Length: 61
Image: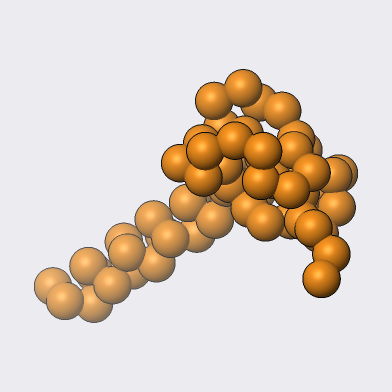
């Protein structure tokens, strides 16, 4: 099994394998480059979820 890359939300650093508390980590990611883009990827996902919730709320009205 290959180790994955993680983004440390507290330090802003990419880690290979789980070096820190899992509470501080986002991931896993397949590459260090992808892990480095974690804040951008997480923002995109959060925006998409927010849009889905907005559409669901409109449907309920």
